[in-house]
Length: 117
Image (cartoon, rainbow, N blue to C red; front, top):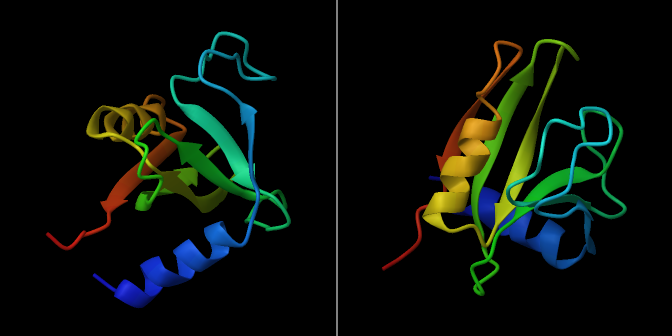
């Protein structure tokens, strides 16, 4: 893995405010049947492919390190982007992975950060 990539993500996240606008248990604003199972938000004053802030999934691990990214393709929006996972447990990573692979319109891969032992 490329340690400089992870260092750049850490720098971006550490210098940005994390806004959780869709806390765990809340419904999606456009799709009320979709309930968030992990806190979801964005890095303030950043931009992603959709013109909004870079998306983050924020887990319950107290470490709060960036430990993975989801690379997704959204066929309905006809775009792709990454979503940063911060402090996600293994169970939360699996939830995020499943969330981005539940429908035929969105697919994603989870890229885990190799942490030194």
